[in-house]
Image 1 (tube, helix red, strand yellow):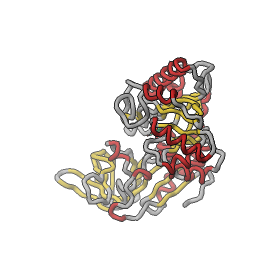
Image 2 (tube, helix red, strand yellow; image 1 turned 60 degrees about the vertical axis):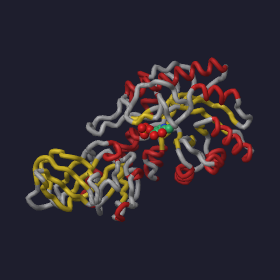
Image 3 (cartoon, helix red, strand yellow; image 1 turned 180 degrees about the vertical axis):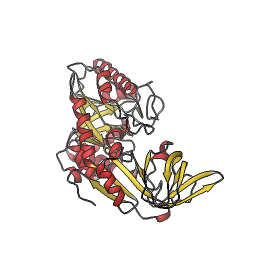
Image 4 (tube, helix red, strand yellow; image 1 turned 45 degrees about the horizontal axis):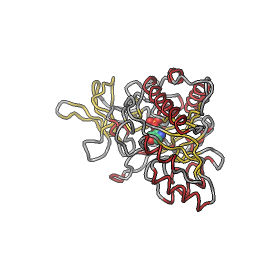
Length: 384
Ligand SMILES: Cc1ncc(COP(=O)(O)O)c(C=O)c1O
């Protein structure tokens, strides 16, 4: 659960700290890429930068994937700055501003279009820049297997109903090159559900292409591969997912854009116990840090898995403990009533699965506590 390099860093780092193990990440992404690239059919991976845009993480992931998916002008500029002009970037997401559309036509290789109105605005931006925008229309395919974070399959601000996609094709402006269709319907799917969702999108795309007599070069079937926070040592079953997609030898390039299942396993958040007390029969470990650094357990409603490094002294406590942070809110809970062999004041608590939607989705400034130290280990990375 904790790599040796992370354990060494966790024992010595000034706390609170985030530790990213770039060697661990490198091996993990390399294995995913090898599995997904095995035939039949052609699969590309775009990393969803929103999961973790850390520079060391981006540079490590970029060695193994085909490109990066960004969802804002800020992410686009950041990814270009970190990875340079050559890495393929797709710009998606709802509510793009005129400035973002102007940046997208100049600095992104693909644009995922969310509505007819956006398509017209994108065409205007492309015309102003004197370029042709390479477009994938984002479809909200009806139905679908569900998932923890549903973004489609029913009423949704994301993507377009199939009828709207038809209308887009009927009025394609000359500045738009239709490259394919895009879908991301849900996150938190196991391999079978994720593949069923991908198949539904591919089947819909096949019918759409035939109906309009257009050749679709690319179909994006989204991310959403599950990370099981109750089983930190079990990963998403990429081989089962790849097989269940049942891709033919020939067909459009199928692109996936995972985020969480790429980086979650390679990040750890380390804090130490400042106080240990009993309240109305329950034990609480109050730690240096909290959900302003690691909002993931509150956002997703789980206990963040953790290990106690016995670096403290004192009598300690054995049994269920609720691990909380320093914020003046009862919501500042990282893990609730989790049994431990022993926890004491001064112990270091190492939270796993903190490499995705963790630091970057947290409300850093609430109560003005200091930010965590950021450590990158492995990958020839320097401490920052
Ligand atoms: C369009 C799109 N693609 C990919 C992702 C990545 O999803 P996940 O991190 O669950 O793999 C998201 C997440 O919200 C998304 O909105």
